[in-house]
Length: 117
Figure (tube, rainbow, N blue to C red):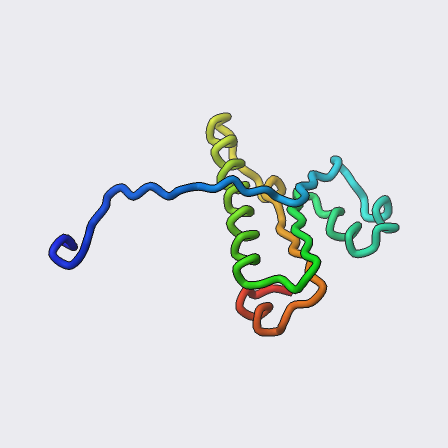
């Protein structure tokens, strides 16, 4: 139906690039907040039962960098889902990582665009 109006390619391959997560953290079972309290805010983030992806930035983060971080999070989630499917298991919410983008400052505009805290 679209051929008269433009070029149609089906399927269209998406070139994937190698991306690296700065830090992937999986907490020990039954990790308690008291054990990581000396780490302050980092300890509170690590005390979550979920794995965590930490993406620290030295300078204020840009919208493109946030999108890259979100892409990495989705790649990890897809990988975990494929692994669960291969093992005929259901992926629990606790198995899904949380993304923590650490930046020295972020404008209210950027925060609102990504519904961030």
